[in-house]
Length: 136
Image (tube, rainbow, N blue to C red; front, side, top):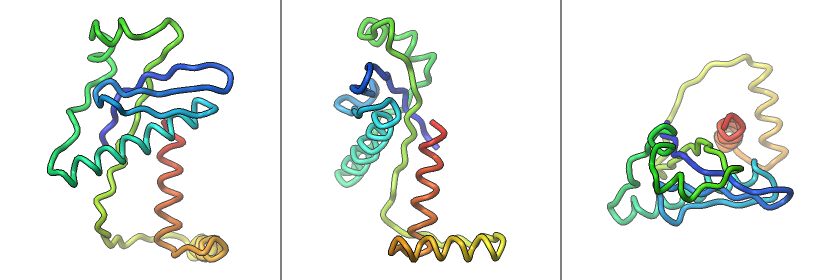
């Protein structure tokens, strides 16, 4: 999975994440986690828009490369920090996957999906997205 370097800033209930390698890509929220989640969504939307126009995102740089870029360092305050923003690019085409898990867990998944009005696949995709985002 590709990760872009983001710069997070804020305090109290106003937070933002900007992605220097993708001009105009930023997220915001009332907590650092909300700002990061919003930045993940923005990055995905930009990637999708570019793909529809036959273009792609610029190459992602490492934290070290961004930290040594004078233009980025000049734009950062002492309280800003680097974060990794995963690119969750949805191709729009479904792919089948054959997975194995405990029958009891599968039954619990089906029950939880039904309560939410989702298919098993939609529930698992949503849970996977949440797990991926919780690790950044």
